[in-house]
Image 1 (cartoon, rainbow, N blue to C red):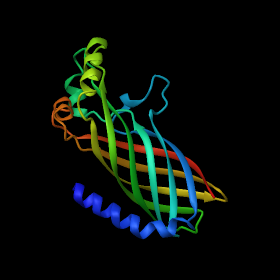
Image 2 (cartoon, rainbow, N blue to C red; image 1 turned 90 degrees about the horizontal axis):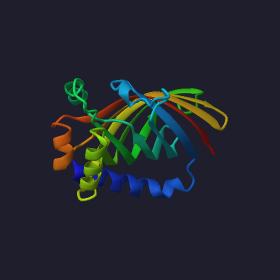
Image 3 (cartoon, helix red, strand yellow; image 1 turned 90 degrees about the vertical axis):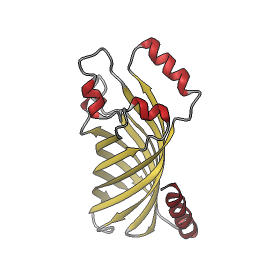
Image 4 (cartoon, one colour; image 1 turned 30 degrees about the horizontal axis):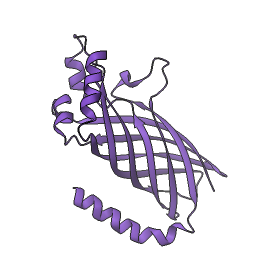
Amino acid sequence: MRLLTAAVAAVVSVVTVPALASAQTSLDGFGSVQMDNPAALGSSGFPVDFGGRVSFDLVPAVQVFGEFGRLGNVMPTLVETGLAFTRLNLTASAFYGEGGVRLLAAPHSAVSPYVEGTAGVANLSFGGIGSTTDALIRAALNLVDTREPLYGIGGGVLLQGGPLRFDLGYRYKYVQANSVLSSFLSAGQKLQAHQIRFGVGVRF
């Protein structure tokens, strides 16, 4: 999988670098609500999944982009359910960076459905067990590599008018827990998030 991801990235870079100089650029910011994890909402009720991206139009119907953001909680629901009657509130958040390709169905229309795929790296952070244990976990994380592969797919609708654009869509993010610590704390379950995303941006 890593070799395939590297190969795809290499091909995309070779094909796209000459085109990016003349490509239209877009900057977007977004917030997301996790469908399967209401606990990921902050005390204010606002989503804690957020981020931004920069995208380039290779051709009118194809965009490449880079995205950076934060996933508020990717802890498996099964683990959280098992801990519901204890004093533990184990969470797994992540800051991430990824690249991807988006395909637009109607690039010249004011309303354009789209699909996209992404791959990147997530830096995991575990907590919620207790103040003392959290400190020990953070100390342990400093001794191990908590960067894990991140993959995603999504789709939605892009609303465009002049330089402004609005994005309403769905995203699925999957963090592949390869390290012993990540696999142990997640009980071997998937670290993932199902998001409803709201974004706004400008193109120039």
